[in-house]
Image (cartoon, rainbow, N blue to C red; front, top):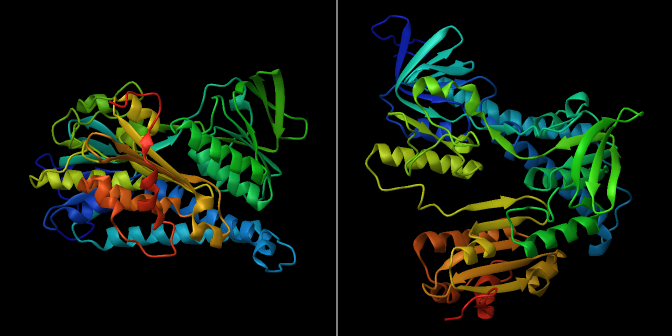
Amino acid sequence: MNRGDHPTGANGDVETFDHVIVGAGQAAKTLAAGLPPRETIAIVEGARVGGTCVNTGCTPTKALIASAKVAHQARRAGDYGVRVEGVEIDFAALMERMNAIRGDSREGLERWYESSEHITLVRGWAQFTAPRTLRVGERTLRGAHVYLNVGARARVPDLPGLSDVPWLDNDRLLELEELPEHLVVLGGSYVGLEFGQMFHRFGARVSVVEAGSQLMGREDGDVAEAARELLAREGLTIELDASVTRVESTAGGGVALVLDGAQGEWRLEGSHLLVAAGRTPNSDRLELGRAGIEVDERGHVRVDDVLRTSAEGVFALGDVNGEGAFTHTSVNDAEIVLDQLHGGPRTLSARHAVYNMYIDPPLGRVGLTERAALERGHRVLKATMPMRSMSRAIELGETEGFVKVLVDADSERFLGVAALGVRGDEVVAPFAVAMNAGIDWRTFRTTVLSHPTIAEMMPWTLDGLEPAGDQDDG
């Protein structure tokens, strides 16, 4: 088939493909590259190729975080014996850099799809009309296999007055042309904290509002508190246990949150409001009922251990299935599906959770939290080491944070690791390998790693293992 030709079924008006991928996010390329080149593939995208990661997530935000890091280091230059005469932020220039990077990534993906003879890139929003049959504009596509890779969007909380003010989500924040004077962030988790620190380093005042008693609600309390302390020391205002009762406009054209906390009701005013209150899967846009595809109570498409949905021949990958809201888990979903199609053994349940939060210093995480490990009944051994005890962190002048390692006392295998500190996003990688390979902690302890690095201290950290929490030592 020549690229641009559309195969038709017996009905004449239905274009038939071996595979239809709905959504051109990160799982799509992995899937398309792994499918047999002799088979026809349609990739449907109604927005921008590359999905969240390339357009509004990993690529643009990490580009901005890099700019923020440079500004922060320049302000600290005196700590290293370097004189810098003032630090100025060119907001337009750093946004231009970010746009160039994400534009290059998106255009590279588009070129790859359009140059592949067996791939047809279909522009438009898809809805099911029947099992494995989708309407995209004036076209109808049918696939022997269909893959849902439609991602998620920012959740809009039901707050009185929110619809009457010009609030921002993570997408619209990336389109700003001027630096906010005072950015109020609603939500104290990953999106909110990364943007909050970033914009503070650009020169904005930043206030983070969290309804819970700690930031980063799914993390252990000691990790969350260490993150709160370092952000507060940097100058961000953190409001915990603060529930929003309503949202209002201010006389100066800004936004005010009316909050209810321990001190009663009070107002927090800012020039801009970022709503970072979680994500909502885009499953509601697909008319899944027409295809017999089930969703859970949060709208995530239900999948089994190899990403099959309740409808024959239909798989769900990435954020829409609720099994991991990260680029690397989306890509791994595609690898599991490809393996399953070829009779391989890979499964979703065999995957260890691994992710990072890119505040600075970053948080790297793999496996279970301490709280989750204890709740599941493990006899947990725990070891911690502060970054200030590591020579490489001292040399870098970045001694915030700590590493915490969790081990199962019975199997002697790793349960989880949290690394909040310089290179924390990289430090968890060898633990992820050890967990995947089933390496016990005693074997890991004998590993010799190069000096001077943060990673070299990870085997040494294990010398501090002791029972965690209030548990029976057996």
